[in-house]
Length: 192
Image 1 (cartoon, rainbow, N blue to C red):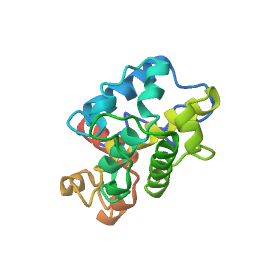
Image 2 (image 1 turned 30 degrees about the vertical axis):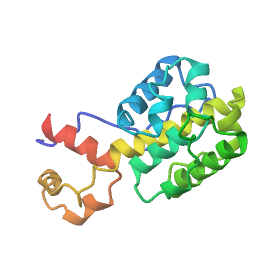
Image 3 (image 1 turned 135 degrees about the vertical axis):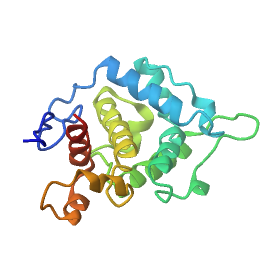
């Protein structure tokens, strides 16, 4: 059979931190930090917090003001929030006050929820203060947004060449119903 499945993904792709609240390893946090550094390298407002050192305290300190993750949410979906609503440091580099950071985090968490990346139970206070109980949820939020940014472009409607992977007798509309992970799985198997 030509289209033998070589790669099998679970019915729901594993999500770091989903089963175990302490599941994010240092290497995963470092990878998320490197991705944020790369994705926001040219953003003038996020640059004050970049590059993010992947060490625990530095990572959470860099995202505490809400600017970095709000800017990343805008990369995932440019309509996720109104950038003009963000509180930004003054021209002389004054740091944001706690209320400004909490407002930014509220904007970020609302935007993340609107684009399907929200994390239940994560509060703006946890994002600003980064208590151990909120760190894993904060990493889950970053992971959800990174996953969405990387997989959202994988859609049959955006990539007509995906229709070349149709199996005999399969309806082209069926590919449009697949989640990006399934389309990616089909693409890998198609090329093996």
